[in-house]
Length: 114
Length: 110
Image (cartoon, rainbow over all chains, first blue to last red; front, side, top):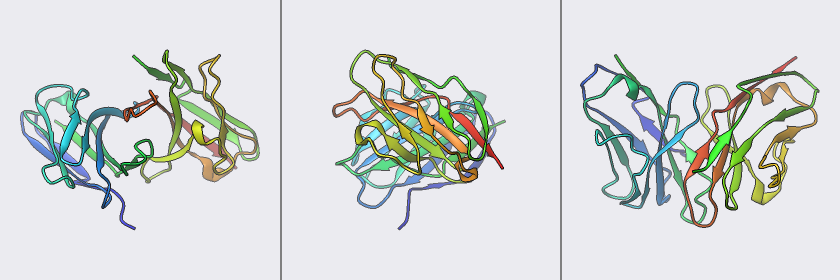
């Protein structure tokens, strides 16, 4: 079946531009996670949604980062006024409600800020 | 705060040799530990978790609370095991947040 999909797969932005990254979770998965993975690092938690509710945004590095999931399915991670330190792979994962630990990851979006 | 340490960035072994990928953690409670794997050009996926105590693709991992370790082992490495391996920790209970280590790149040579 279809897994988690993310778009675009690659994004190059000039410093100061706004970007929007999309995540389509597995159908029926109520939990959705965003992670940031810098080069040479493991994924770092950004935010968590249960359906449309953003239950945890403690990992968002600054107020330039904003995530939404208005209808409880597709999610968008928006970064305003991008900076070079935002360059990373952004991973989305979804999970069935009954098993939050087994997170199914998307392929990621590689963001490069020049 | 919890932390996961994978001391080896790179690990290279020959096919048929035993392999051990190290993972140490710091957390004062009762965590749940996981190993995730990323094969070349594929997405990150769960390999195994300590609570299930199962062997996946010949890999096992035992949680040692005394040494705060969760090393991943396989007695006879195969070339298809070459991948990036990440150890991850969850604080347990209903907590959902995963803390990942930096990963170890395993290369199994023919």
